[in-house]
Image 1 (cartoon, rainbow, N blue to C red):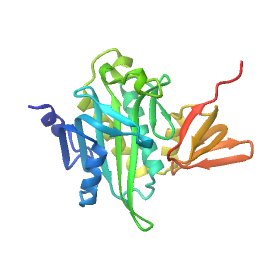
Image 2 (image 1 turned 45 degrees about the vertical axis):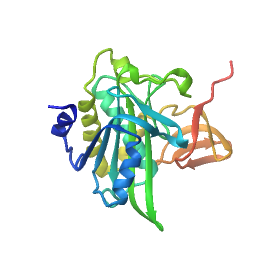
Image 3 (image 1 turned 90 degrees about the horizontal axis):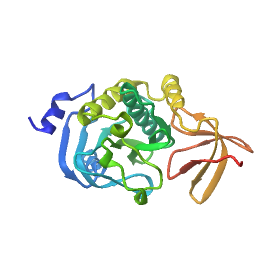
Amino acid sequence: MTEFDRLRSMLPVGEFGRPLHCFETLGSTNDFAKEQAANDAPHGTLVVADEQTAGRGRGERRWLTSKGDGLAWSLILRPGRSGGETIGGVGCLTALAVCEALQENGIRGEIKWPNDVLIAGRKVAGVLVEASWEGMELVWMVVGAGVNVKPDSIPPEGAIEYPATSVETELGHAVDRWAFLRTILRIFAERWPHLGSNGITHAIEERLAFRGDEVELEGGGKTLRGRLQGIQPDGRLRLLTSRGALDVAAGEIRLRPITAEP
């Protein structure tokens, strides 16, 4: 049985994982998934690459997955399944699923809004959500994630802007990548019908990095400072600024904590 045969035997999980497209090497799972979505691929279609050579994060930042070392996958989502689909909400839900999968392995993960997962302040995963509209109507979304599983998946320090780690580095032992992916998808499937609910919002806020801390947001040529209060059901960040509470939508935004003056 090949590695991909073994993955196929674990899927689908609920409504996710069929059809399944597996590649030894692929430029970007999100790009391939978007092509499939544009050609009417169904909700729940999963794209997985053992090696990803042209993966992207926000702002066209590169996310490479070396062969056999990490997880690179994308899901096609179509509206009308949960009633609460937004890009920000889906991104936070995906990050939550990764965090809860880590928790099942004994590791606490945190969500660094809008799209990263941290372990002890180091990035272990990134999420990218892309979508297509016809006028004002959402047609489909593609959510992609990259997870550093093995130590060799950690990018060199000069290639990243945030400290990184891997699942195996934190656990201290080997991890079955496909079993870990199945756990993420199982949790995502369990949570998906409740997207946008108070329960999901509360679960995300419990994992929200820097909650209660002073942070700085940079994007669109603007900088905002304030205390990070929480998350709205649609994935917007609630920031308490000097001018009052402000809800900030996910996008090309960089968040960093403000170090207190000594």
